[in-house]
Amino acid sequence: MTTIQLEKVTLADLPTLRKISIATFTDTFGAQNTPENLAAYLTAAYAPAKLQQELTEPASQFYFVYVDQQLAGYLKINHDAAQTEAKGGATLEVERIYILPAFKRHGLGRYLIKQAETSAQQLGKTAIWLGVWENNFAAQQFYAKLGFVRTGQHSFVMGTDPQTDFILTKQL
Image (tube, rainbow, N blue to C red; front, side):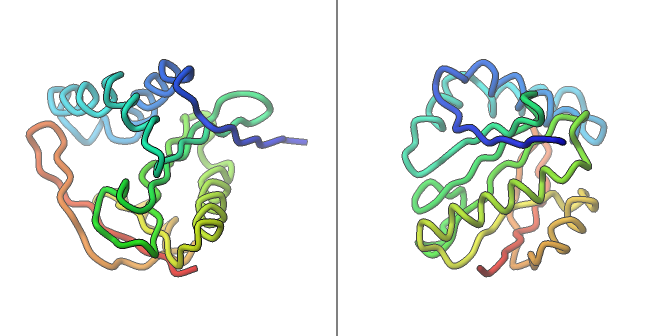
């Protein structure tokens, strides 16, 4: 039987968090972006100092997900002022669901969304939201199946390439 475990990420886990961030982001978006833009984004987004700042933000939480004791991915959630968009105090942002390639299509995305919903409810939030790239059709379909609806969009800059993320929201 497969066991799935969630573990809160700490500062001591920063090197592992950085490594898995780069691997999963590259796997998901590398083929659709130029090497230069991808490298610029990875260098800025996953710089150790930036990840340290994110890990020490009280209104953000990171959780590693393990399958049979193997690291499979992670979840990052933000609430209140830590959200990347000003959505107010009633919402929680799912900023990242990153799954390593070997563990995709095993139900971990659904599992991590459930964790985000539980965290939101414990914090008294009434909705969760996330951004998904306009060209990531598989992710859009996945989130729609979970009850998310498109409520807006925002810009996401990949190196020098401005792209569009759709904002998807789910009422709890």
